[in-house]
Image (cartoon, rainbow, N blue to C red; front, side, top):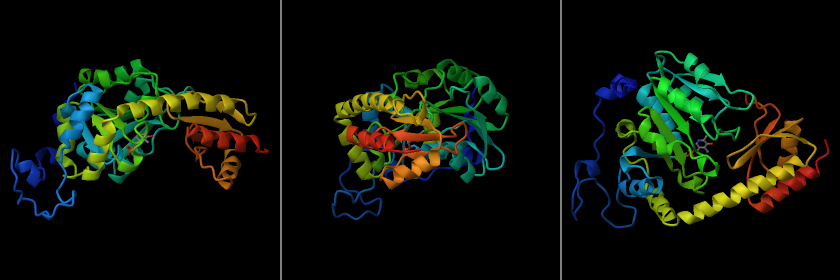
Length: 345
Ligand SMILES: *Cc1c(COP(=O)(O)O)cnc(C)c1O
């Protein structure tokens, strides 16, 4: 069974968190002389709510979970970093991840001197629990999964995710940054079944707010409390909280974007499939397509010269020959297709 107390690093378990002015006082007041703020009202002169309750209540309503099951971070990158910091002692503990996947899990592990072990995906870019479990040992704190996966675009096998959650003694981080574009439901509705599950989602993709830097982690309230203990006290600034609250007032906009982008993904896929230079298009449940071509490097450079930037994934494991193409506006996708049609190999 998963033991949260043992999972948390001993020094973190023992420490007392920083206590900010707005945490020590709760209640009604009108004169705030506690935080050395500038009293002249600029709209931004006060520190933000360190636990972002208003925003979390809104997200909780939308997602159908408790506000105490939500952690908000400076992008998903913050919870990825904190999950490693809260559980892994440098040089002692390790984490395991599928390969290829999102690059920040490795960067966060290496930053903290935590060993990063990988298990290659199969020929369908899917995974099985068993080989991942074999990579773990008594010092493995986290297994990272990403579904739909980046850069491959596919969703991972649900039964295997469940098997991993039930067999692994540490935390399974399931990154669902692209879940809004997927026909699957993801795991949020099953969060309460698994005390060792952390789900990551973000405002950067479907919500169209990559610029505000707001990532979400969903987990048991005890895991969330552990992350809150070590985060920067005011990690989400006032502007970000306000902007996200405003956007959440009109959630239909985000749904419309998702519908158009998924439609556009299908259209782009058909157009690409008709081009002889495109050898393969991997199935995608995200807002991007991974394609394989014979000579990715010159093709990438050709597109750059025409002012079109895609992501060259040629050097990523299992992705040789691959370019990752984000689904853009119809006119942008047309510009890409036009450029590719004019390319002479
Ligand atoms: C884009 C992306 C994110 C989002 O990161 P933010 O820091 O929230 O912008 C997270 N995970 C994956 C796999 C991604 O591709």
